[in-house]
Image 1 (spheres, one colour):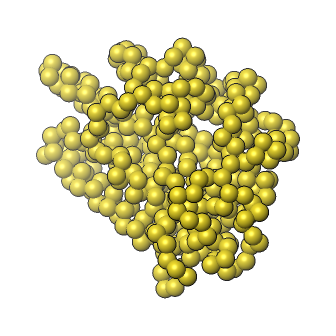
Image 2 (tube, helix red, strand yellow; image 1 turned 120 degrees about the horizontal axis):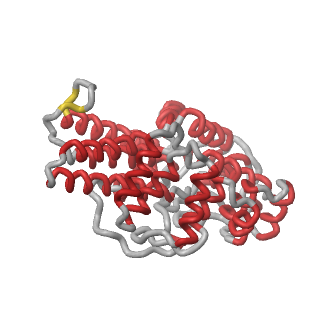
Length: 367
């Protein structure tokens, strides 16, 4: 089979994040429309444009593997209105199915319906905050958008994420005291939930209901993931570094250290169990390096026995190892049978991206 330059989901995440998520933030970006609100995974060839083009599942990857079939640059397929409505009827138009229909069809009327019917569902509030209208990540939220953030906090009170988003919004508005209150509230909460696994599962179900194969439904659900909180989290960490520098210049070293600790804690929280998705880990590393870069490199790093510089070196080594995994796996998915693609995506969610990539490399490296 002729080799194509196609990358896996995880490899795309790593390569894109290494290029785009620099350790030192760039100048303030221009305002973005709601269609460009988040850092997406770059589009890569994944699926045909309709289930009819998929064919039957066999063990012949040359004829059935979507990564090998589709030319570069193809757009993500969308469900038709009829397919979306059929899926919604099967699922009684509950909050999860409406959000999945909005993602799979690209039609925001389903998000608006979810907002009207389920305003107190945290998944709805999360999507509404970022996706219900034009969004400028350099400006404070409008009164309407801030209301959805308040709904998010109230509907998932143990989740620290809405407090972090509120802190970022308060920093944008110049309300440092309120931002610090939100950060203190976040520090007392045990969860950091972005509902990614729920989003993947319901989107996969929507495509499967429309006639896509198991392998292709899993693939498309993981394609072009919306991760709107990552850019805001990275900027929030920068706000805390800037605040620490202000404290230090005024001679308040204790407050400076506390601000940096808040930033480091945020970075640690982004790095979820199993490093899934891997871009969370890369943003976490970027945040931690940025925070550590504001410290004396020769000072102790917490109670680890390492210096700050040694921890910086360890983070750089970890980042390099993730990049190496992605490079090794770059050509593997086009070789996989449909059954192995299903296994791959299941392993992503169960064990994390490094483990799934190592499994794929171990199985296909000799072929």
